[in-house]
Length: 173
Image 1 (cartoon, helix red, strand yellow):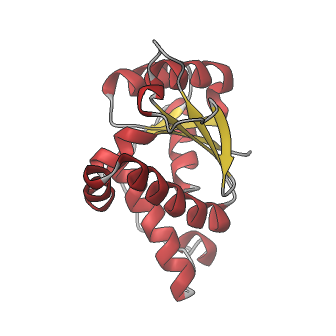
Image 2 (cartoon, rainbow, N blue to C red):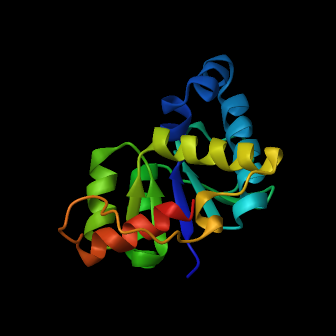
């Protein structure tokens, strides 16, 4: 199953220490740095990625939809927030979507529609780890396979189906 990652752009930029410093210098620098990081991640993982920004700070002459370095970029229309666009996309894609945001309103809405969610710092960490592992040539733990053991791990209670599906999507990051 293919995952469509929907990212709250300014939320991720402002939650990241490195991107936030660039964003304070110039808003466009922060957006470009985020898109560079995401394009490097996309080369490794090949997921469909859409970044949604508030249209108030859109660059001049920009369209509301664009594709830069293989990453789909959307700016909300005037009078509409990026959160509304993300909610609309989560409603449309449902269980095929993974929403990246630290905004609790967006997270709760996406989860209610069946989408998996991850907070911005968590996604940035997964993204950085994937790029690092690719540059160092390290295989992930999942590629090693199952090692038989009789040792039990974790609680005996099984997670709900929704939580198991969400966990599978996050592991694919």
